[in-house]
Length: 169
Image: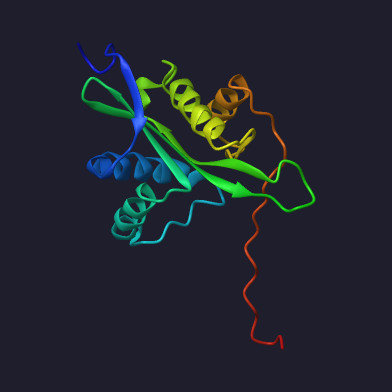
């Protein structure tokens, strides 16, 4: 049985999954370079990523899920408990931070399985709303999230602040 035909198991990621987490989140960062908000990765991001991702695996406010097909890690979803301003309901929600499915497993239900597991975590925490950002240029991602019940709520705009010219004070 190949990873393409193997049953998909979704579980919480642990320290032993760190290499797979780093690989998939790095692939997500690289794939996001066309987005103006994410195109400027630090030159040394790869050396920073591993300890950052390792610390996140142990954070009780976060959930990092990994999807496994056979022995191959094929997907990842990370979300965190978040608080909105006190003027809006719900005040607490889950914020989906990182999602990646390896290309040869896309459109095979991996994302849906990851999301259903995240739903159970949210329910156990008393959370009834999820939020996420998805790049406007990411047509496949936007279609997938719409199909899974998310609705667009805002557009994030990015603008670089101009450098000061010599004559300005």
